[in-house]
Image (cartoon, rainbow, N blue to C red; front, side):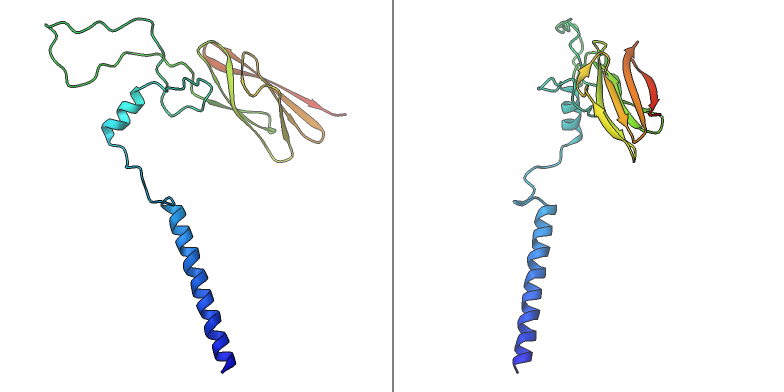
Length: 177
């Protein structure tokens, strides 16, 4: 009888632990207090994409569409002769930054960078291949950032410049003799 009671208690404990684990996983998947944010409608998405980022952080990771930049000119107010329009007025903008580009570094790794409107380069990331480490003094916005990939007997240095809005790398490989 003692063995039967022990088995029943063990099964009850296992079932309780499984139930608690499943409940915890379920809460993590749907937010602990339930989903408090409704999905955005298509109109809300378009409005948020058309609105400039309030933080104005040009060094942030791009959201998939270029941020509008101030054009310095105001849109004239509609005159009474203009026909009414249901669509919002959108000023043409030029992208403030170029799209990030991937730059292979002679088998040592990859640098992802982009040009900014002011001619500086922002390094988005530097990823070392196996056997290499990244040594970067310039991980912020700079006009000539430099990233080094250091291996056991080789060092690959990548210097970046923005020429005509295009990230242009200069790659130098040094070996220890």
